[in-house]
Length: 191
Ligand SMILES: [Zn+2]
Figure 1 (cartoon, rainbow, N blue to C red):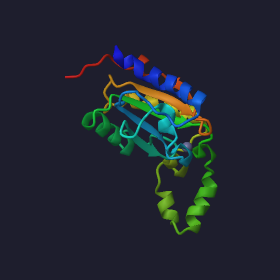
Figure 2: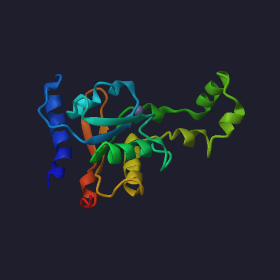
Figure 3: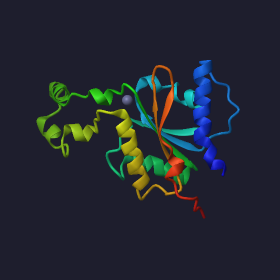
Figure 4: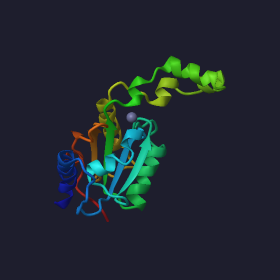
């Protein structure tokens, strides 16, 4: 099945990208993919070329850490639009090494918020707590695996949509595969 090729195609492209380290000129067909990744500025204009994704190929959803805090929240809403309204057929969850979400110091952040005029009540109202509200994590790979697993089980994401998990090295652009979504996806059942 042709669907089997896209993940391997991205990884093979990434290997060539690393070897060539130049702006890619690709002949790959447009990819119907949704990419969920971190808002880290080192990934801007870097992750897509490292994947062989051109402007217009992918719907890219970003937040702090590529974290999923609500099974029906903004991220899943955007993925649902990407899949059901915009024709995306696969989801790539891409975390990265050296993510700032691993260095969140809850007490320090609380003090910074208070100093900038955020009220104690507003902070106290965050459930179940500030750190959990931020979805801070200690291991980017573990976060990616958790997000992939939660998306895989999410009733709003069709079972036949592969959800892949990868980590990108923000200095070199190297992609490491954590979860091959083709293994978990159900056979296509469209129409
Ligand atoms: Zn990050």
